[in-house]
Image 1 (cartoon, rainbow, N blue to C red):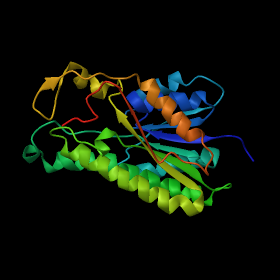
Image 2 (cartoon, helix red, strand yellow):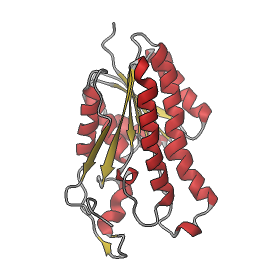
Image 3 (cartoon, helix red, strand yellow):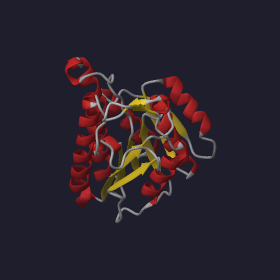
Image 4 (cartoon, rainbow, N blue to C red):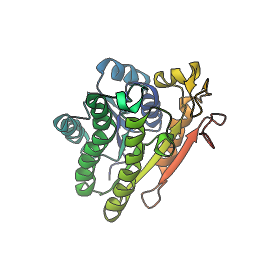
Length: 250
């Protein structure tokens, strides 16, 4: 049996996805870097130094054909998928709920939820039939899977839904040696959290700057989740900046 471990990471062109991809690569994984921006994926690949490959695979997770081609390309080259990290995500403008357009709503739902579902479907098809069978799926849930921020209905709704997808995936994969867990992240340093450093509205209407943690802490947590044997699973993990106003906020 080959000792090669193959991971697909979506949203790998920046921020959390980049950190996770680099950390997994340093642990010896072959990493398939998926995302919409080829330039960002190339930058991530440049950080993946070592003997195992890092592949740049531009992918639109909202497009079923694009997702199928991503997985088919990995299978053609390596014959299996051991780990899928559903990290790709986006948000909508922080405006009152009634001012959101249907296009803004659908963009978030299609990327954060439908994209994760499409990737999970492809992973299931492969993990069920490969030898040895099984694998692991790790979903990026966000602390918005538990508690919303003001004016965040599309993002919060999809992250709550991600929790349901995680539980269903874990249950449906049980008989096939497929484990699924979710990491809920709070205020990791990335381009998407710059606004939190500068000041973000709170539930009481006050605007304050929120502390952030280094993204490497998230990557280390994912590496731990991925390191477990398939008869063990971290179903949910929360990793957050300790001093951010999350516990008890609102």
